[in-house]
Image 1 (tube, helix red, strand yellow):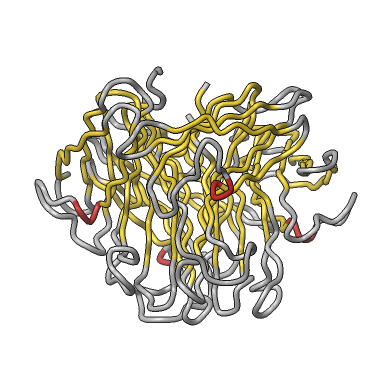
Image 2: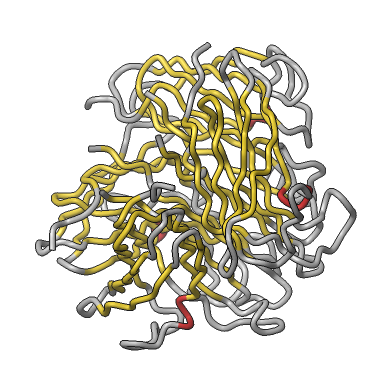
Length: 125
Length: 125
Length: 125
Length: 125
């Protein structure tokens, strides 16, 4: 099947909530990118993280095999460096083949409450 | 009226929340696709479900009559196989005629809390 | 200023939550369309409501003056007929001039909980 | 790197929630625009605020340096005038260079509850 989507995606509104309440990892606060690769070739994906007050950090590389998804929690990225919790950031995602990208947040900062958000990232080219 | 929308739609960020709390089916945790067919001909819709670690599963066929909507809970799909709860997945939706597709989640994993998310799926062609 | 946006917008995933908990009207459960008309001429807007099991109902007309917004709760529409609470529906919005449309839900079905969702409607033409 | 995105963005559904519960500023209710400027030149951004019943107010200017993000709480804008809490409004954002814009709400009106929403703003030109 032909690959579907775009090779560049943007999310301006990142901020991993901190702290978390409830059982880990199910109720850990997180930001997450979800990537779907419908094509017949693996996608080499790279994230660049933009900040308010310093130069961008990256690339954070990962791979999405052909005809597969990957849901990647931003909390789990450590190389080249971890994204500090509760710090505003933005994301640029580039892929070697067209993919579709969604961005999700789970927020358990408040005990007994649960907030989720969901956007399709902004596609470019 | 002319049909409105696109014939291919993508949602990378699926995961049916589990467990649920509260009265069924009103407060059952779910993922849902909402399809609107404004045209004068029925839409033959097919879902394909993509996973992290196995080949895609599908098609899951359903029909949206002319000038009608359908809201389909992913929890309710059983043929060719049920989507396992709490398992990450992505969706490809194709339709015989243009439609518009929205994706929603209701999450009642945490007793006394309620979280909802909503995106318009990513349209292609 | 030139009008910005599109003249047709679609929302497949409507369902006014029921019941509500908390003080009215601040915490009443609702579905809402938000329309922004940046142009120099008033927008004549019409909603058509699509259902699962009957013909579409409408038009529900309203007006958004030049350089103004309007936030319209679907709960408040009564002519040609009220939208039944907790009933799935979809929306087609057409406007005499380009506008931009957002769709929001406030859900207070669960006492002590609050859920909100937000999408930009799907633009057409 | 080339700048990515659009120079005009629209959000019809603004309304800063009021009141707030919980520790400030972490749990203060807010509406927020998040802007990512991937390009090599600073972005001069201007917001115009549209209302139901009066002429638009603005511009509210701010700057997003090259290769930087800015997350701006609408609550914090005071010049030319503060946006009244709990008052419906819409936003037009224009930028001197292409940027990408997301709109977020945090709602703590209900003690012990937390609601978040998230949309990519509607891009134009």
